[in-house]
Image 1: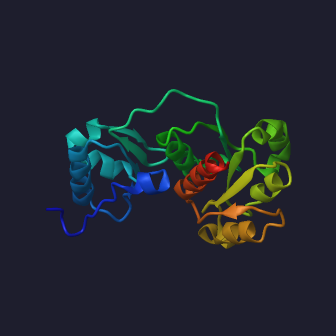
Image 2 (image 1 turned 90 degrees about the vertical axis):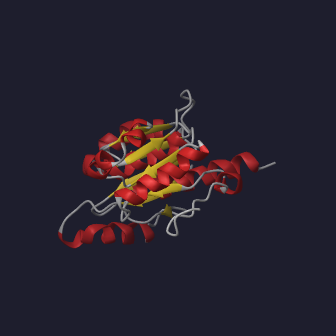
Image 3 (image 1 turned 45 degrees about the vertical axis):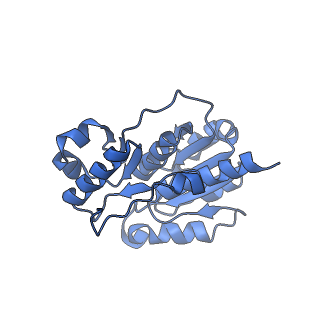
Length: 222
């Protein structure tokens, strides 16, 4: 019988095209171990997000051995072997190096779903020549995830440069009136670039899922 606080959704991939992900923040090590034990019985691959290094180190050895853990994004692949690289369909672009955590979360989420991406980091508007140099490369991707904190100007600038689907991820990078990302979120929501989709603060995982939905919808079109 399943523990009362665990009820995994093993049929989500059939419904949505991507499976349930284990969000590890606010979960105890014991809860994560029990979840992984149930997944191991099914023999299915799973993605874990917001898994801090201390929690990862405290997990059962058998579970750690079945994981590919990335401390920068705090993500882990459980019982999963990535497919061979394919043509990148998503560009993940950050304003600064400080925004790389959520960006890496997006990259890893896409990788888990066998979608190749191009990571283009530290091309924010404070040195806009860096973005201009990569603009043609970014345009070649049908989906662009723009990750930015502080004033979050990057999504608006990209919104005037690239024709593809643009997904903005405001981050908690900044100080003072940045308000842990609330200013960046508001800036993305009021962007004058039309058609920008906005995810929650630091939600690289959510942005990747939005990209997956977009690409899946494209394949479903007649």
